[in-house]
Amino acid sequence: MEPSAHDIIRASALKRTFGRGGGAVTVLKGVDLSIPAGRLIALKGRSGSGKTTLINLLSALDRPTEGQITFAGRELTALSNQERDMVRRKEMGLIFQSFALIPLMSAYENVEFILRVAGVPAAGRKEAAVQALEQVGLKARMHHRPFELSGGEQQRTAIARAIAHKPKLLLADEPTAELDSRTGLQIMKVFRELVETAGMTIIMTTHDPAIMEIVDHVYELEDGQIVAQA
Image 1: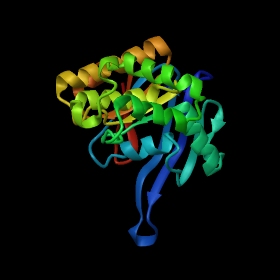
Image 2: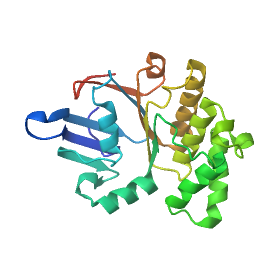
Image 3: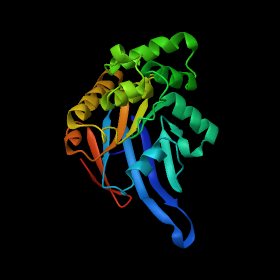
Image 4: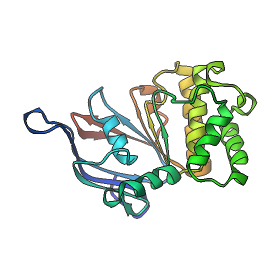
């Protein structure tokens, strides 16, 4: 994709090296990426291709060794750690392979807690949490704790937690990897609806060929570089 004024996030000449000297390993090797707002994007590639590293950089969890990332018109790589944390809390949503739910909290409490972290006023937290759980089809199960939920329900809780503050950008690292194919497609249906009804931009990593048929655009990574687009 060519860069445009409507891109929500752009990466230019991204390089990420871990370690120093003879033991240094370069995981990303000059990645360029331009993602328009309101799209569902997949990053594919074998284990070790650099997908998770790229997600971590785009979500401001990590800094590139070289290169720039611009998000919603601001250069993320020029911000302080505190400023980056604030952007991530208020304008981004993150979903990890492990659902990372708090075990002693119900689905509702897990979502409401993240809204507190995002600085959502108390008066609006309950409505936002319930609305997010309703979006993912879990309103009837919102008072159950994680161990009382199926894998798919736990993943949908994680999605509700990530979208409750209405982020501009949702980043998901292998969100369907631990799910059966039917549940995985249910999760993708939720993603598709978020893009089409809420205008959210979603970038996810995946190995699943079926999922790549659902997304708007696919970037393939190999040895730290984008080698194909579709």
